[in-house]
Structures are given as structure tokens and as C-alpha cells.
Length: 362
Image 1 (spheres, rainbow, N blue to C red):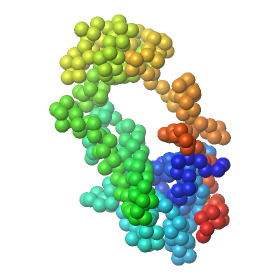
Image 2: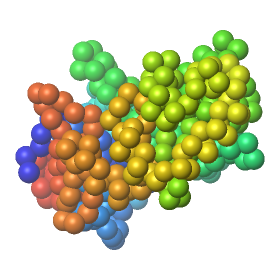
Image 3: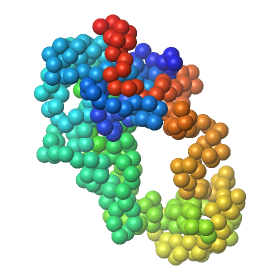
């Protein structure tokens, strides 16, 4: 398909990696960018089931070969954005570090994705999402009282990592197109995860956040911002923080607001949890959906992936899209004039060499 989206015409050079950098490249592709991925010779993969690899073209280069390295530098010279997710120093040892790249292309945006960042005592240590969010305080704040809960790799890799890399390189691209000056974007998951917790730090500053888990308004400690089990073993979620929404919920489920008030300080939360738990055990999840879903009670069922894809709201919005029998998340966010699109399946590594060189005029 022809590229479409607000980033149509932007050339992105992606060095193959894992996790947040490929996810960022997927988002840029979904918005219409021409993403070329440099793969290792002999690599396997591709196809519609490789969701985070979708929408690229691929060229395989042996970066230890001088001719291939020179070709890579030519690609860099034609790029608007470069994305790499290696440990600090790897690209420099390959002869492709920022000093070399920006000399080849002064307007280049050089995006670097790591867990710990490009400098600091831990910069060269191995790690993964769970380790990165551990030192930020995010992991310690999530989960039941007994021990922290692992929030998949949403808070670190993708929330604190890929999203901030994408935001950073596009901000830098705006600057580059205005001034002709490229720069390095140091996107560290530890930085992004801390930034994501701005609201918690604001609550701490106001004296409204306790260090214990399940002791706060938004961490499961509050009876009107929590998850409850139903009669069939399924679960529902509640979030009526505003007084008028809480009043509606209480009216519909038969709760006396005077006995269980909408108190943000912690007063009555434990008793409220016990009372609400007993109420929601009286009906199945579907029965509660029939009563509460679509109202201002701030209610939603807790669904599986399969159930989410079949939910009428998700279906009408096209939040999931099918590609050759594989379910893909649709491009997000949505644009009124220049909508993004899944630009195609993930390429077989190295399969687009001639086409890339021709279209990039190399």
C-alpha cells in the first residue's frame, strides 16, 4: 500500500533490536514514516504475526564489512531519524556513533533507547523492564500489600521507553526542520518511568500519598476505585472518584452514601471494601454490565484479550484490525486529516535491499 499518515515522507533508519525501540518504529510506521530496518545477515522472521515488526522494509548488512558499513553510512546520510537500542558504546565501536552520523548528516535526529540511559553508574549493566521500573519507585507502588505486582512491561519498556523515544525524536525532528540542526535523543526507561509518575509525585508533595501499597486513592486501597470479584468468578472495575458519579453508583447498587462516603482521605475505605465485595459477589459480571455499563457510574468489566476484541465499543471503533488472520492493535492516536494505517506486514529480514537503495537514491 502507499504510505499514509502525518509522517509520510519522513525517513527512519532502525537498527534491529528488541522491545521499546521496535515498538517506537512500529508507531512511526503506523503514522506513515518510511521505516527501513537494518537486519543481521541470515536472520529469520517476518510475516503478519510479527506485530511490532509491521510496516517496515528490511535490508541485511554485515556491519563488520567495510563496504557494508559504508553503505550503512549512506543510509544514515539520507535519514531523518535513526533509532538504536544497544548498550552505550556499541554504535561507537561499530563506527556509527552520533559524532560520525551527525557529521554525515547534520540534521539527523539520533534516537537512543536504553534502560539506564547513556551515562550513570548503571549505564553499562544488563537489565530489563522489571529492573528499570524497580529503581524508579513505580514497581514498589503497584500491587497488593504483600508484594509488588509486575505490570507486564507496559510501565517500563513501552510507557517509559518507546513512548518517550517517539515523543523525543519527533520533538527533535521539529527542531531539525526549523533550524537544520540534528541532535541526540537519550531516551532512558528510568527517566520515562519517573516522568510517568508525575501525578504520584504531586500527591506526595501535597501529603496525600502513603508509601504503603493498597493504602492510597489510586492503588486499590479505596473502595470506590478498585476491582471486585463477581458471582461467576469474573471481575469488574470501579472508578467513580467524583461525588456525582459515586452517588449514581450507590443508587444503582443500593449503598447508603452516608454510611460509606466518597472520602478521599482513607476514612471508611476498609469497611467500604468489605461491603462492596459482598455486594458484587451477588451477581455475575454480565448482570453487573447490564445494570452499570454505559452509565456515569465509572464502571467496566475486566476482560480477556479475546473478550476485549469482541466488545461492541472496540468493534465499532475498529480498535483491533485483522491481518492475514492475526489480530493487530490499530494505529493510535487517530487523525482527522491524515489518518495513519498499518503499512503492511513485517518484512522478511533483508528482503527489500534493492527496493530500498533505489527509493532512497543510493
